[in-house]
Amino acid sequence: MSQETEPSATTTATPSGTPRSRQFRLVALTVVLAVLAVALVPIVLGFGPPTRDQLMERAGLKGKRELLIGVKDDQPGIALQLPGGGWQGFDIDIAYLIASYLDFDRSQVVLLPIESEDRARRQAPHNDRFVTVDLVIASYSITEERTKEGATFSAPYLHTEQSVITLADEPGPVSSLEDLRGRRVCTLTTSTSQARLREVGAEALGRNKISECVQELYDGQVDAVTTDAAILAGFVTASQDPDAFPVGLKRAKPLRHWDIGSSPQERWGVNTGPNTALRDLVDLALHASAKDEENKVWEEAYDDNLRWQQPANRPQSVAEEQQPEPRKVEVRQWPWERFALPLPGHPGPPPYAPVRASGRGVRRGRGRRSSGC
Image (cartoon, rainbow, N blue to C red; front, side):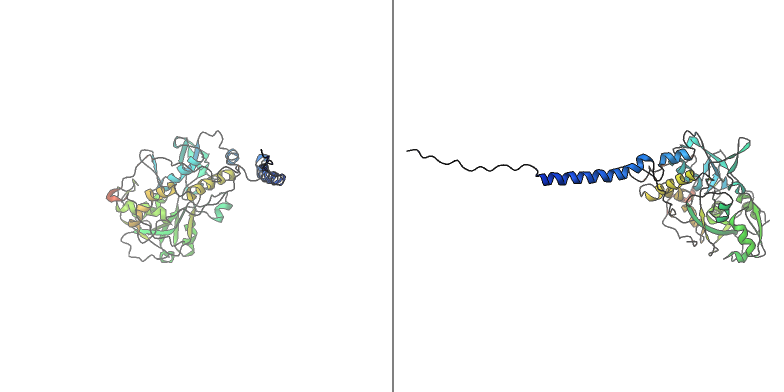
């Protein structure tokens, strides 16, 4: 006799999502879309800070074929025009660093010698006439007075301090500007050093080129020369080793570099004049250089031009060995883009490789900090 069995109970599969979970996912998606909308609308509509492309347009760089940069031409280690027409120095490397960030290659950069008194108005001779340069990168210390005269400065790209050089047989000591009271001291016209010399009772003589001051020191017409240590260091180095720089001064004698200790810090900046968009782009270039640990353009410029001179200039520090803290410029980008703008490319090898005898090209350890810090 067959026995009927009752059908076994079957378990019904639950749907992959309950109405409550589907509702939760819908709410979450709505929130995400709302957040994206809040982030994207200002960008699409053009609110907030400008983009890098807008800064380039406002700065007048779109379609520009040449970048004119005013530089010094007689400062060994900083900016020196060589007998063959090439250029060498820390300011020159900084000029190419910034130009690269602005999408100009070396062939599009025109370096023009500029006098100290013309740096505020950015006027330099070019093709038998004076032109207004785009940038002034000419060992130009940032001061309130120069800002009032029309200079618009970037963040500083180098820190140094005022110092003094004399002939090596100067008995001294020269431990402060007060030690130069009553003596003839040469410095750059319109430099920050002139006022300080007058305050201590020295006879201040201003010249347009610091090389003219050094020549007068060699000729016995002045007792000392004072300006920023980074500028004077190259002359001291060249006086001890004529192969170091092709300075071309006559009757050169060994020089001595004096640390006057209490002088204020000198902060060198780039003058862009009234072009504030260009100033912001320069600051972006300096920020990118300072904040990327793999980018060594500034450090290489320091090593190649300044660090190796330190032994010849002791006890005076040539300059601070770290790039100054840059100014952060806000720029507008899409949320998925990296905020930091493209890093400035390495400007490539310099057009002239300086002769460095006795292993001076070897990178050295960290030097003494400037007493201005």
